[in-house]
Length: 117
Image (cartoon, rainbow, N blue to C red; front, top):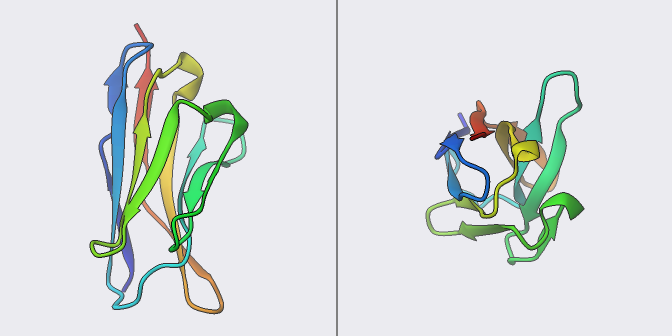
């Protein structure tokens, strides 16, 4: 049973930083792409950033230059370093990963990030 367990969310002031982590367990295989999405009430879930097993990255325009995604392929863990946080970054952040040729997707349970003074 594959599981994605997120950690690192919380409350931070504008301009502050947070680091999210997501550890994948339950598979002996390395995930293909791993990534982070976010969602606010009434809006669709949107991609924040993703990273392939080879390390290629992709970012939403709104976070470029502020967020950095990385992964540890030994630990099957993906990280999201979030700097210069803005109130509009407030959302529930979800970890996503897929495995195999069929790219079967799994999601984490979500972690709340609140940017407020």
